[in-house]
Length: 151
Image (cartoon, rainbow, N blue to C red):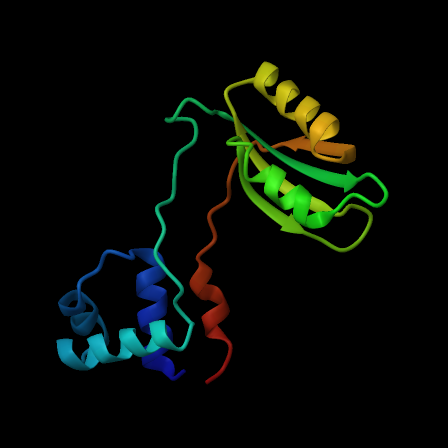
């Protein structure tokens, strides 16, 4: 990736709906050359897709929590993954190292719904221990910062 590719990725991170013409103008290349570069970034796996960013409060889910989970001894990870996929309040999940096995981000309507999710995680999804924290504010950092690391 050269500096133009990094700039294209940064622009697309900021607004994934930019047209080739808009991108081309920003990087001072032709629209065809820019389109070729973006297609190459896709085919090489640098860009894997485009996603919408949701405002969970507007969707009626203002309670955002980060929970660390420890599974019961011997519980199957694949089975846990399948179980997580059935819980709509789980909006992000990570397998982690350290004291806990997983970290999840939840978007709930309120504390009653959160308690229901906890009960399901512990009852039917193999979770032994949960440590949760309430998200007070999401700090949006530009993902393009990682692109500032050398050529």
